[in-house]
Every structure is written in C-alpha cells, then in structure tokens.
Image (tube, rainbow, N blue to C red; front, side, top):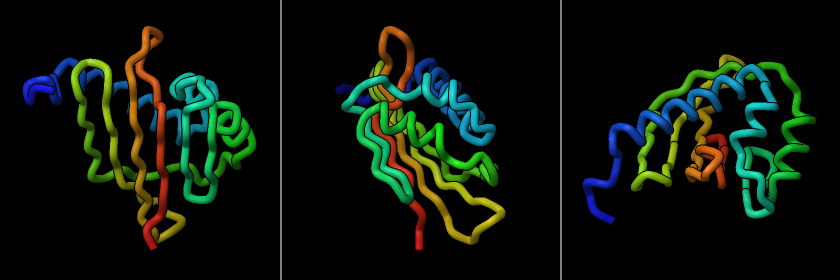
Length: 127
C-alpha cells in the first residue's frame, strides 16, 4: 500500500461521519443504528469489557439486553486511520462520570456495498 492512500481526506470524512453515528447511537441506546453499523456476519467479533461476542447474533442479543442507563461518556484521544478507500481503524479512549476508570475502544471498519460496517471491535477498561 502506498503512503498516499493512507488517510485520504474524503475517506476519513466518511468514516468520521459513521463513527459519530455509532457514538450517538451508543449513548442513546439506538439499537437499530448499532445493529446497522455492525457487519451482519458470523465472523464479526466484539470483545467487550465483560463479554466476548462472536457473530452478529450474539452482538445483537447483547445490545437488546444491556441496561440503557449511564451511557453518556466523553471521548478523548480519538484516532481514525483509513487505509485505501475501504478499510479504517478507529481508536478512542472514554471516561464516564460514574467511574474513575478509563475505557478504550477500537474498531475495524470495512466499506461494503451497503456502506461502512464494523467487522471487529474491542472495548476494555484500564485498571
């Protein structure tokens, strides 16, 4: 891959828009948008702070059953890196008013014909 294909402005803008949609959906518990933004595949993985989810069905079940309280958070150190026109990695840290712990989130996004979708995600808390 050529260096100039990394972080093309138009591609970064596309991913930033979807990343913002994801964050808005996460903090408002909009499960319809969250479900849309994860790739519907048994190969999609979400490793969470307290759960390991393999496949879109497990991810959807988790989203449907999680409590919809205390979801607000503040992001910091967000880095979005795109590779070519169809792959991106989004990394961020987050804090919540209800805890002193710092969370970390990383997502791999792929652009499919239906749009940008998360194919892998990791969420963890620092001790």
